[in-house]
Image 1 (cartoon, rainbow, N blue to C red):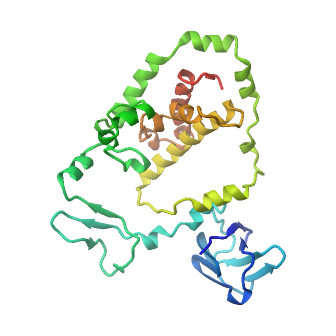
Image 2: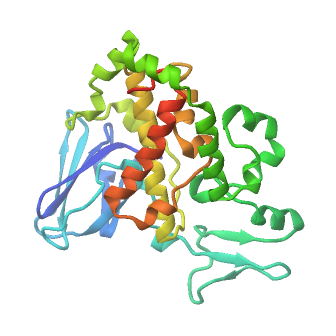
Image 3: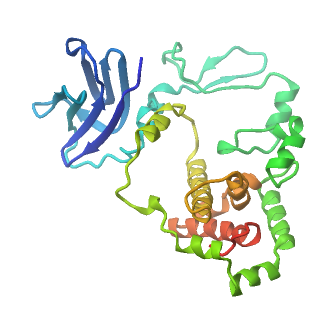
Amino acid sequence: MITPHFRVSQDNDHVYLFIHAPYTNLKEVEYFSNESDFRFVASPYFLRLNLPGLVEESEGSDVHYDLEKGDFTVKLQKKIPGENFKDLDLLSVLLAPNPQKTLQPKITLEGESTVAESEGEDSSDEWFLEQTVSDNKAKEAVSCYGYGFANKATGLFRSHEAEMMEIVDIRNADLKDQEQRRREREVKELEDFNEDHYLADLMDPLSLLLNALKMAPPYLDSDINLTTEEEDYIISLPKKSYLVSKVQKKILSLTVVALVYSWAYDRRVTEGDHCIESGWAIAKVCPVLSYFEVFPKECGKQIERKVKSVYEIIKERNLVYPVKSQS
């Protein structure tokens, strides 16, 4: 089945789904909505969305089809009038299954069979999070300090030490906790900071630096629309759900701030045209990529202070490593 192009909008009382599904047999078109679950079937297209709020079919709900454009417009009534449905522009989030309905954590203990954590639930559901500890290597991996998404990856340095040294700045990350990684990063930044380079750029900036400072990035335009290719890419992203704690969610949000800042920096200094050095520059500026650092200390602060603290950390690296260090 093919996932059709779609977008979602809303007004005070309704949700509107615009689905591009040309060359379909109207007699075979079906759609279903139940609370947050919406499904659309029109061979060869299939669309299932997990809406961020509850909807219901009523007299105000209807479907229109534009034969020339091949577009369906589905109008659904909000169950709670006036409710604001968040993140309707995040297509991959809408496509992901509801984790509360699909994730059933299971635990496998050494020497025991797998048992569901909750009794009475459907054990045939394939969406579950499985944890197994079955041998010494697994126990060794658990004792290591993680990195990557939600710090779930371990052991990469034991098997790919040479390759990792070409990609990141930290060494032996499996054996260092977050505090050790931060101290190592801070010491290295002090060693690598070149005062002469910084003063030279400040007093006599290069023309390339001035151009970067004057650039008006297109992504600051609030009216920007996704292209068809960008929509295809978002739809093709893996649709996964994860069990993360409230603290991990805060840490992941600050991690996104660091990644987006580093990407935006490279976008500016290359004047919108990423180059072969872009990967290196983004990884250098972003401590999440260069030192596998997350921001647990910042999570206890107010939102403005959280973002500012992350910005200060990245700004320090921005002044040390890139050639254009004033932008």
